Image 1 (cartoon, rainbow, N blue to C red):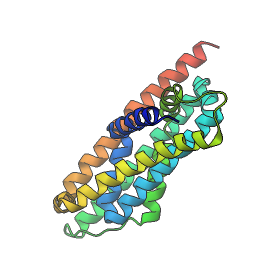
Image 2 (cartoon, one colour; image 1 turned 90 degrees about the horizontal axis):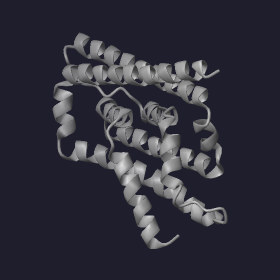
Image 3 (cartoon, one colour; image 1 turned 180 degrees about the horizontal axis):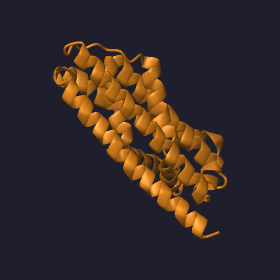
Length: 216
């Protein structure tokens, strides 16, 4: 792959990773609940899931997903359900903090954070659409395995690097300490954000299902 083409791909990956959404909320929440280790675990696992989507795209499987509106909508509903699960966890943690007179305790293990980071990306079918649009100019029929590996590593690596950078900035600038001192308020905002995202994702999924059923 030419350097110019790779730089174009890398820039698109950076802009895609920087777009705010459920992934950013989950990584920030993991950092708040478990500190730097949990935040980095969520960031790296998210990058792994994005890399997996890239592999599926290169293999042509993502095209099958986007060609099936029903399957796409069902994955969106699964993502909405997982957002509700995360919001419930935030609310329960808020109750625990309140009952302990506001004391701050890191309770989320890195393994749990990695699971959340991976799942919020893996259950996002819009990644399949993004990958197809992103890779279209860079994939050719005669492309070798090495070039495809570069594509996969670039998008997965940049995603993990971006979210890891967000975590480190939170920790090193003292922003994490500020959030921890206002944990109950932050948890409320976090849970409300997740529930708002749930409504948005679920409404789109229901609309897509209704359209798919109407077309039958």
